[in-house]
Image (cartoon, rainbow, N blue to C red):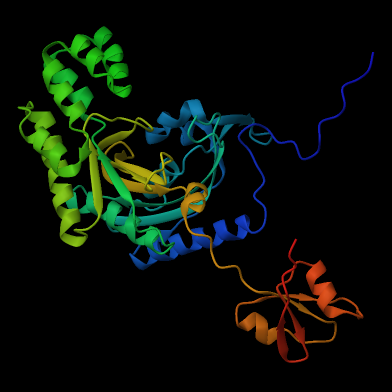
Length: 382
């Protein structure tokens, strides 16, 4: 009986991949461009650890990430640890502990890698890069609008200006069900019908909410149309307050960015289940993949907060390629400091070669330095 051949050393688990040149450099540069924009808007950077004790990582808003969290035993303390699936709960922990005495509103930003137990059909990667902002201690339409405005400014730095910001109200449907007295056993089937956008099933299962939910389901799209549907829906008080907050947020955004494309899906409740108010998802034209998402939540169970997480991996797939830096072969004994100061990459020769141009081409360079002259290599044609 023959043994199976050993796995190829480049084989990685499903949902994990290597990022190679030039994509790895492009992603890192994109993250730093996002972070620079966040900093320019007053957001200060924090760096939480990759691993935390399970009971702390999954407390509060972190409980919503429990099913996506990898766990392992700490060999030193013999306590269970979790590997973060999302950075927002960690920033919330920092805000309520290490920075509990800092002035509010507190503006924090972050960037790092997360690992999830499983991907989705649209986003199969299990290792996910994140870069985001959290605004903690403010509960107002202006704070909700700031997530959209700062996110749009950050993405514009990467050349992404034709974006759509989809605003949602995850608490709206549960609030409507509660205020209408829908029996608990009838809520999950109705929620699934709404999630599938199945108007017929919503009408059949909605009971006294059937007309309202169907109207809101069909109103998803342009912000004005959806807001009009919410305004005429005769919502009970708690649901009406959510709708009014959404309308005020849209108004605040339009004061600062009237040309920004806004859509609304009143009955959408995607994502982690810790959101308590206006939420948002960022899309590029013609793409179903999310470039970012976020929204309102409670920090430490009591403090109002809102945030936005951008996904550099997804952004990299839709942004225009960054202009590659010149790669210059510098023959041995030649100084390339001037070129590096100009932003070029220099590959120093380690020994003398007879044909510097050929050596430069072999090393994948675009130019070589002939004494003080930068010489472009002729691109070979097939």
